[in-house]
Image 1 (spheres, rainbow, N blue to C red):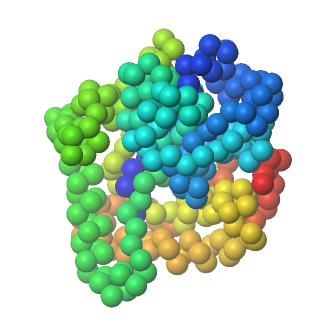
Image 2 (cartoon, rainbow, N blue to C red):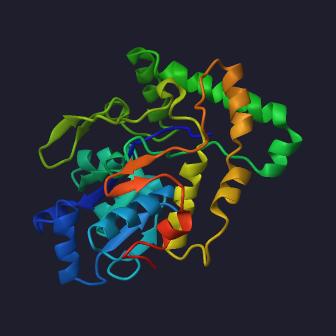
Length: 291
């Protein structure tokens, strides 16, 4: 199941802002002047943060595998690494983007919901062996998390309580207001702009955020193929069906009284085009910039 939608961002350093690189287009100009010199971080080479970072850079004409250097950094270490100048930008989940603003070391250049509004992000996953051996436990765990997401979004007080829990030292040790602001869609970019986001971090959204659409899984496969993480085109639909157990999810959703969509596929409107999963190999191999 999908645990949340939206809520990641791409942060650039204040040094880049002083060089007038404040968005994708102006960043591309600086990259062209310093080929191979700028360093960007993601949290895991095959993960969603890497895919968002690469997609955003490439959409603005930057080749992430050659025009810049890309490194892997754990999320809690992003801000400290930017503070000491180890990197010029990164993609991570919250609150590490708003934390860079609070610490005055970076600014938000783009949110991932600008790339794909209401995109899937974190997931609940287990090995196929576990699910096959313990289907009841898998269903119960899925249903329980659906109920938890519904509870978080049931009232502002619940969302604040969740933020207070997350902010504790034994969790992420971050100011509760920083956590809460972006959980509630209250954004600032660190350069003077403030807004209420139309696509804030969502944990439930009446169940619409949680369904493991096959087309969502296929999209991430297309990006892994695009960047050479897959050496050839797989059977995209077969892989998605094997991993995204939509039937089990539907059973768990029914147990939690959560509605589920009629189709396992959906059309997504990304900021530079649509994706519907109908021809994944052509989509993956059709980008001008790829590995």
